[in-house]
Image (cartoon, rainbow, N blue to C red; front, top):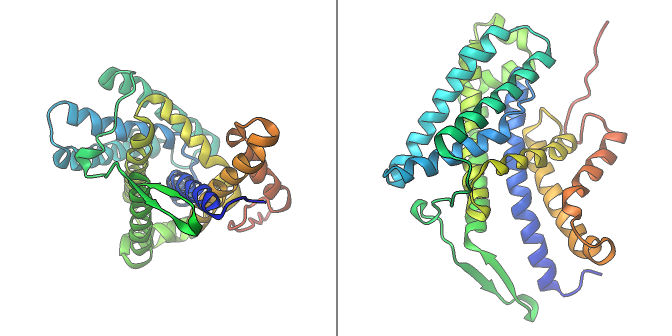
Length: 305
């Protein structure tokens, strides 16, 4: 059914890499939604903006080891600006108002980014960041498997980032405050947790994740504003894993990545002419929602009236 074992391994690896990137994108959505109940439509453009900032600073003569931390500073400034200018004035407004505000953030960053960085596709500074560009070749089961070193770096880097995030959320004081705010907004505020501080921190963490995602995606296809559409890949992951579950974002991303790659190679191309990766994930997510609307890892919400 799946052909030669080495070919199956190659397909599974490529699906794992795609799933890792989907999971990273979804993580940014989950963190912001969990702490503030805001569905951040701007997460996709944050990926682009962070990557373009890194490349742009390097193009202006800064070495990568300087451009990288400066990009993090820019994302921190962006987080503070969003909290002060957009979120703080809209506290206690309906969810749809906050969602529309993130659309406004998206449009602003697109316009501002095109003025500062231009609209052309830019190459990610892969080698300057120390990301290897060769490939590793194996011969399992008498066959042949090739693994791009940049993809391996992406997977390892994502694992390190996720572990660091989980340790921060579970072990640090600020991490526990973020979780408390997500579990019970009013109770967290009543014990003195600062909403403004948490929002800035969460948006900054989402910015860090966006930068990591932008570097990974940019190393494969370059960086341009067209990269923003990768945010749509997070939607079926969120539908599958749940909007409030970090575990769901990770597992859902990997499941979607592997499933769509298997379907594309073994059924999509032979039977449907290919290009099933653009819609297959949404079909899977829709099937899950029909039986479990809160997703596989989300909690069922019961509203009392």
